[in-house]
Length: 635
Ligand code: PEP
Ligand code: MN
Image 1 (cartoon, protein in one colour):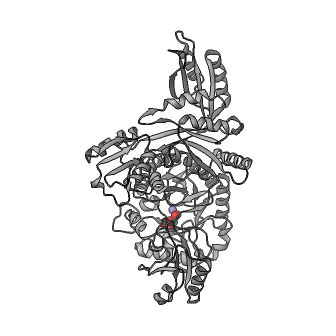
Image 2: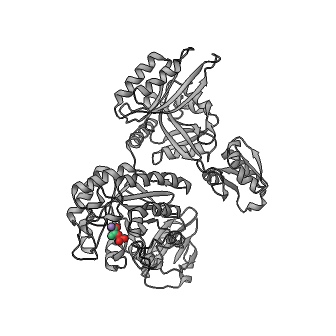
């Protein structure tokens, strides 16, 4: 049963309710939600609900109708999101686990780990105990395999996932691994589920070969009732009469499970299809269906694999899949989970330093232009994800630069270009005008426009919609189709705030989903822009003293002007081709006070041999005027 507590419940009352339920033989879990705190009480006994309703501090008691209780959405309305080491699983994250079917040798698992990590995987898989159909097939390296997995995981920074087949191995495996996998063949091995659940660690629970969704959720319930909250469900195909693929991937299980359970659900297209060339389309389909991630078999040399070679991807195929997932994730409103790279670790150290200087109360600040809920704020939160950084709103772009220079802010988040509308020229001018500030990084975000209105508003009643002119033009098709009038406003989040204040059921705003949260509006329609390839690139700026001289960089932004004579620009640009440097962008801006003269802004890749870049810079300095490096950073 679910015991909803009063908002003002006292700690002593809560404690008394828990003790009462436990004294009746129930296990009690406290679940703190956004709107309310509830206690979930489960167990083999049934008690009179009315007795519980009478306890002080109880607002309501609701029986859970499903046979699975702790796993059910009835008990917990919000998605379960948890961390496995540095990796976040669930919610709006797409988490990719990859590795060979089986750990075959130390070299093989290390080689695979390096390859999948480079392509963007965040967890490493590999079986050390292989439950095989034939007793004569390769059974796995056992503890030795776990040891190699741990070594490969530590080397690459990836948590490791491996299958457990016997309760007797649980304690031994705990020393080596981060996530226990329960294989399809063991999904209803209840003694194994109880033992693994009692370890309290994350568990990846495969769906059984012929298990119904309810049986699968009951298996999750065993794990949770035994002591873990961190269960990842994995759809890996079921047995049907079809023989063209190894199993039949039941993709509709993904949205079905998401309705029934709060647990994250991922897809395993490798075991589902059994065929390498079917893995990529079904992996994408899994994410399109709403899965929180994938587990994919990858082998450096699939022909030689001791198990599941035909379904294992070559590393190049996996790299291609990760590229496609990057694009697809943003289309479905999710983000690929990434391992914190060196840049983020360096940044986190700088953030901490900045906060320390201010004393324990001040977290460091990133200034963005616009009101709370602006896309710029989303960019700030994305870039500084996980660090103790507060996004502070300023009214004009120039204030970002002023505040960073004065130290009122530690960082600035400045939009430079939008993939649909082009460059934000004012910010190029500001970058030039503040020589003491540098670009230290960049972040690209997908701009996803939503129709927001006061709670209870019906879409068909809306007559006017307010937003920034660019957002209105990007959603023009959608608005025209519904005969809604577009009205310009100074910014998107400002329009959301205004609509929230007006309380008029005939108006709406176009803004980010975050703005809906800030201003208490409902999202009536999501992703209403005509072109979903709508991205904005932001530069992160900081004072010179915030830059680590030893940071790893792969992108440069430069600015220079040239003499007003034939061939002067082309001789500068030819230096890039002479040194084999890849130019990413060229922008020109008029020089203030010097009519018909221009500054040229260039972005380019820094090659792994940094000296090539340094030599090219020396040469361009001799050919140009007013040369300056705006920033060296990781692009
Ligand atoms: C595996 O992941 O290698 C495996 C054996 O999977 P399943 O249990 O889904 O067959
Ligand atoms: Mn396998």
